[in-house]
Image (tube, rainbow, N blue to C red):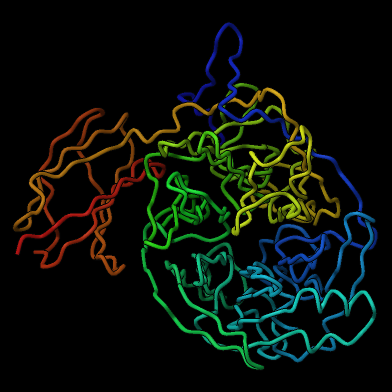
Length: 534
């Protein structure tokens, strides 16, 4: 059901109040056509010398509800494309000449990928496998020589020598994201999904979320790939995510890392997460004090940094979201519709996060499953965050939005009208124009839920807890161990709006310290470490 989320309003002075928010740029979206490039979504890409390499993904729109009709192999993208955005032309080659393991993986959807120098690494992905005679998540790591492959495709030469591949269940992940910090790769979130999709939960598939950040190194120096596991961090509450945006970051202390933006699904509800999680070399930090409302699924995104103010800006383009604006009213739609919103989340020097809506929107209900290909001719950090202060021009292209799903309605899936969606063939050039920003802040994005435990460390099965909630709604809890196991879960009842005191009785005597997480209204999370006195 759609409801007007009345507690979220815009700031008004007279009729409207617009905020510069230390981002003195407007965003301009210009459509261009690339000859020979079809509509695609949920693909992998690399780039070299201004040209793009596009691999995998799907040629159709949103997947159907019926298991027999979802993710048909006939709409897998079995062609590799090279795109020259300057001349707006493309070259292509079929995957058919490649070994079975490589060609099957590289026509899959929602692969995890990262380009390291000239090498594009691709992990996992989901699609029909002829050799397995089933839809599977591929357990593959593939390394691709990007400039070598692009040259071969442009000159109609054999391509098989530009690929290496190994298999391991460690890589059987789809819908996550792959990044790199220093010399270590980070496979963040995602799930293993084998079998036919089924929205009713009938046993046509098996699904396991990784709930992990898998850290590893890759040795690509020999003829055969190899890898070494560095660490596997498990968090079944905050890392239970897939189909999200992993946005590269420059943190206030200058450290480079990533932010997990939103994603699905919450551990106890088929709803998106709203708060982000920061990923650094030292570990991951859920930012539960802030909720991001305007972008909840994977879409095009880009990170921009202003050194003078030590401010990080993350831009999101369209996609699917649990919230969107109708005029000046923020609408909550738990069906998570397609949206046109262009939004920004800014991290200030003090670490505070604020979300803003740009006044202009995407041309259509599109952007879900799209990729933002950054303009690497601009000054940028090693993780591809663009250095705004080093750009002298007042108007410049920061990158291109490629592909994604287009829809003619907000909720085609729930209406069983997925045939009205399609893969978008239009490429959008994205420009920043230096002028006063008219972006609108989303108010009340701060988490109103908090709790304290005293004393901490605890002794025995009783916890004295104080917590505060803004209104009466569902309040659940999870108890997890430090190594990522769920010990207990339940619901808290008989509380009032405002401040509450209660004696929380643990389900068992705890011998090890643990994490207590409260989830309020399926929207706000709060977690604390609870130490157990020996």
